Image (tube, rainbow, N blue to C red):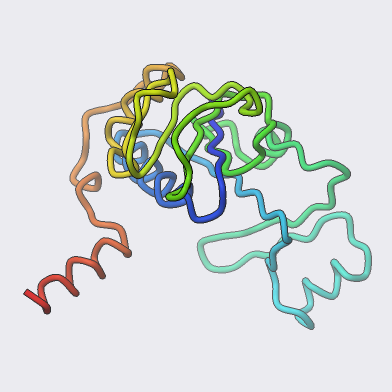
Amino acid sequence: MKLIAFYGPSDSGKTWMIERLVRLWTSRGLRVGVVKHCSKGYQLDRDGKDSSRFWEGGAAAVAVVGPGEWAVRRRVAEADPVRIAQEAFPSGIDVAIVEGFREAPIPRVRVFGASELPSVTDGDPAPIAAVARTPAASTGLPMFALTDAQGLSDFLARHLGLELQAPTAHETTLLRHERASVRSTRRSG
């Protein structure tokens, strides 16, 4: 399994770009997993439900199973995204995208926020590429516009050695956010 991380400030477009990469890569025959860093915690289950009560009671792991999906909640001493991806995803996953975990020892893409000037500093942990709303050539890295998911997809596929199949019709399907934008444009135009 190949790993690639995305890091940058909140609201920089990390999730937006990852959504598109997942869609592009799955349409090209890859099985994609995503590890999302939630620094403020998250809620997998609703308080008071049986599985939540098992967790609160101290269970080391709790699996929740529903129609067509399941999830496992496990206690960890240290949030290591490499280990988590290896343990959480089956052997059939071709690439795992890690959102957050700036210091993870894997290839990284730096996503710049709207108010940031795209430049890489000594504090940046060796990114292989950068993404910004307004790309600048001054980073010394391959730079992609936030709207150029296809260009970034092609670059990362080459860099990571991913074998992509011919595109399917699924590749051109609009994401939920894009459908809403198209509908509002049609109404106003």
